[in-house]
Amino acid sequence: MSTRSHILVVEDEAHLAIGIKFNLEAEGYHVTTLNEGATVLQVIQESEPAVDLLILDIMLPGMSGYAICQMVREAGYDTPILLLSARTLPEDRARGFDVGANQYLTKPFDLDELLSRTKNLLKLPYRSASPRSSLERTQFGQTEVNFETYEATVDGLQVRLTKQEIKLLKYFVENEGRVIPRAELLEKIWGLPGHINTRAPDQFIRRLRKTFEPDPAHPKFFLTIRDAGYRFVSGPETP
Image 1 (tube, rainbow, N blue to C red):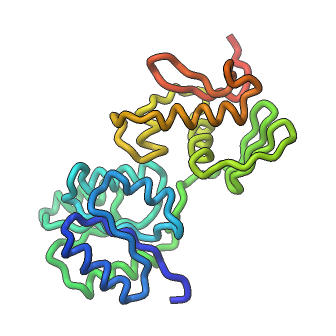
Image 2: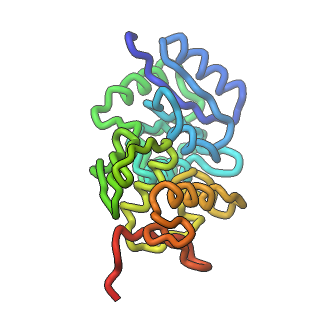
């Protein structure tokens, strides 16, 4: 292969994960492994090189493969997903497809079949390592933002944004006017369960205010809605 495809394998059985990784690497693929699902979305979001295929066991500690698959799809990723499971009932397979899996392989499986399915999934034309979105630019106040280049112009000054800042800003813009709970931001932007106790959303919103608000202490774009969450507005609201 001239360009190695990146495969993320999520499997909590160590011997199986090692075997899959070894055989995929022998075929020339770049392979990353995880033994639990809580960080899958974060890895997909931040991985360099981008993840081209997700091989996902259904029975995982803490979060099922079904839930992870649905979370990845709801975040807007078209990354092909191959589910692995010892469950053989038709309803189990149907559930996998319902939450967005592309293929379902029952354990124990033949190595040649795994490799064949991997090759076929990597050929899918719609494979995308980035969330689906037609939004490339936005403008509010004295700010222009290019989501493709991570660059913004604020009062004529060029500003470079981080990947996570761009993700958060884009989510706000796409949901303008709607109150977004902190739990939703944790799930959609950081890929974490909404009940996790972390100040990450608050810290990043402070950074957005510092960058874009004329007076960060009295924001007019990135608003805090007490006991509810945050809301983005691009301009003055009509009473």
